Length: 211
Length: 203
Image (cartoon, rainbow over all chains, first blue to last red; front, side):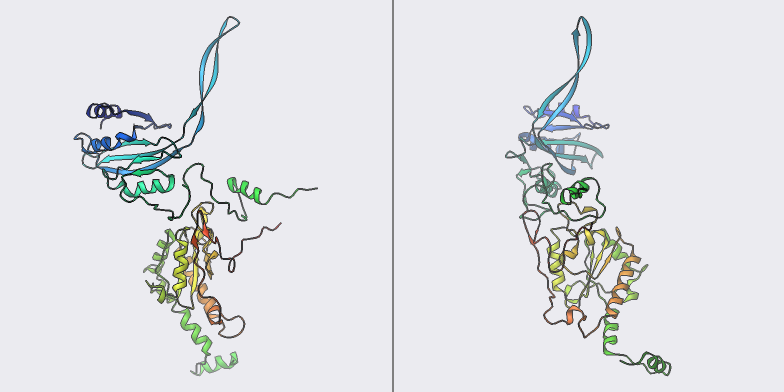
């Protein structure tokens, strides 16, 4: 199968003005994926499905990822001249990464028996601009999974045929898989608490202070 | 009540004496029909228990009724999510008295491994009275058979009269329990205080 770079090159040739980034996973496998701007996602998806060399006719799964706003620390080695001697100093640079929601599509080809090609769409932010185009019109199987991403992460899919909550009930407030979701405090006595539950237990039943 | 010695003497002579209570309980204990109803992996064990290898039919519980109107026993087999809990309570309400509940597996008893989650009910005993609880994740079919036998024992020992008679013979005792409503984050109310109270920490 083609590498992401080859797919990117052909995509940009076939669909001019489309900007595609390749990002790799921050893990040993380092699988690379195509980040597509939401406005062009439908055309890109159509290309990936219909292109004779790719024929990605099967959307295996749709996943949501929440990237909250956070400070990213990167260490950079720097050469500084101190008292006439050149020294290498490690410096940490803090950059603020803006928060966004991400939807990941894993695509395979049943016809040509290859895959996966990973497609990522990112929203502008996590609060008010959480709209993304729905790819259900390209891969029918994405319908329920997009509903699930909507339910748990709050990504609104434009053009989805039936965008309702799927796992939680209709009156549910909030998006429980977001990193900042706080479930209602309904802690109960636990006989053998540990880890997070232990911290909760200490909060609710503070240990007796010995005089 | 007939004297036990006389009774066994009579039985040796081919005369069988019994009481209405015993006959009634014997009949009920040996025809406990469960509701066809499973929620998660425990249901697979429940199905296995009902099939030929474990053969729940030996205990008179082979007919899984597809309607709550015809069932005597609700086996809550699996994780009860908050979305499912009102439906479980409603099914229980639709069953005719006398009715019994077996909470099968860690999830039905307490929420199990999902107890700290946002979406799982921390035990079905918050809304409906549970007669027998089977621990396990999931419990083996033998454990379910043991639970059925425990329930049969419980039914056989029930008195038809007197102060400790079962709920279905007490006039005015509730046979239906309030169905919780979906709230913003949790069910409302989060438990039925009349049948369930949170555990108290002992020091």
